[in-house]
Length: 224
Image 1 (tube, rainbow, N blue to C red):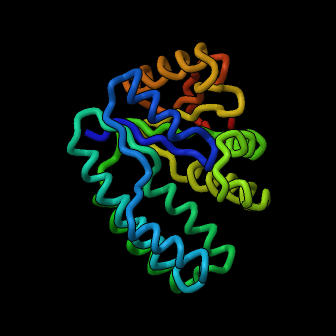
Image 2: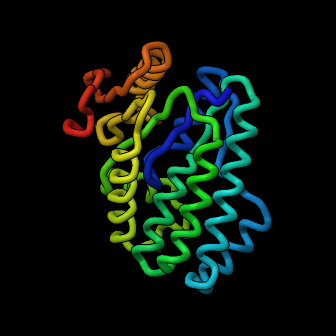
């Protein structure tokens, strides 16, 4: 069964969180998808974004859909990113002019159909952090293709992530304050996160986790 999906902007710490859950809780991890066709599409996309954007995003959506089905067949699975996370990037592509409105409408129809028949996790973890925090982590891990990206791109991405997730979150959700909590370098914070995850799985509802601990939020969207 698909237990957890971890989400957040680039640099939020999604992959690190999945690695921790795999190691500390013995969960089966499903990471970002890489294959030869994806690399070919990315290469074409960077050469001609207007021509290849829709093709690339539909391929990624289909791959994510298949990954969700696979993860749901495994006991205690945890996934790095979701279909909703893919939609964030597509919304940005539309705003940036790489997707025409009619192309976005085509993508959205595929997205809505696949979302309705995709398994939902027992818990969604959303790591919320500001651009400054995300950029510091991006610089620290030093991926060349990320270091050349204009800062404005990251500001837009964080805005789209927050707007998309804060308008779509429902069910069992744990929002982690990624600006306060460093679950990679700080062992106390890591234990705090693991405890909050176990409690969220047990209790359900929407919770906000800061360095002061977790609290239940009824009207969470007015308080974050």
